[in-house]
Image (cartoon, rainbow, N blue to C red; front, side, top):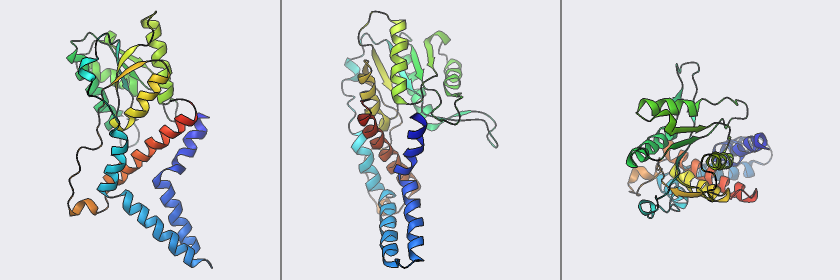
Length: 263
């Protein structure tokens, strides 16, 4: 099931759908259905344009990021058992990359987790969760790499816990609860501070509650701030297309998890 879902997901996202739309358009243009081909080509280009401009990307991201409730964060941190940081990806040593590197989202999540650890004077351990999300490459180096960075920044090894077997957000939730059940036996719903990217936070919060945790959101890696329009905002850009794609990815994730009963 895990591998099947990973193979299906790209066909639900804009890059693949637009590529299919373009390919189908050109095939139709060189057939007897040129009118249909022109219509499909125009529709594909319009969708690509809309997803690639800042106002649309902003609205898509806001539809998810705007759901985060962090106003009560400062007054709800008593009796917290762990600062949970969800893994966000890694680039492995390969070819022209001479060493492993944490991805941009992972860096921001890790750094925010370390900031929280220091804010609470080292009393709350960090639990970094995430194995390999690639069904064709099951070996993950991210958690150990994150731990090495954290230790080099002054975090004691016994205060940086890792979980390496989960392959997705739901499995992270299950494994986090298992670790906390073992570390804090007899506790009902473990209270944790949850750190992940802002776009990923709404789905992650619902997963953590579903598996029996009491998460407090503390997002990092914000995708959007405020919308400030100018003429360049209506020109297609790689960053806006990426933001739109990530937002749609999260909505698909939320819908898929709902169908599977994981949220």
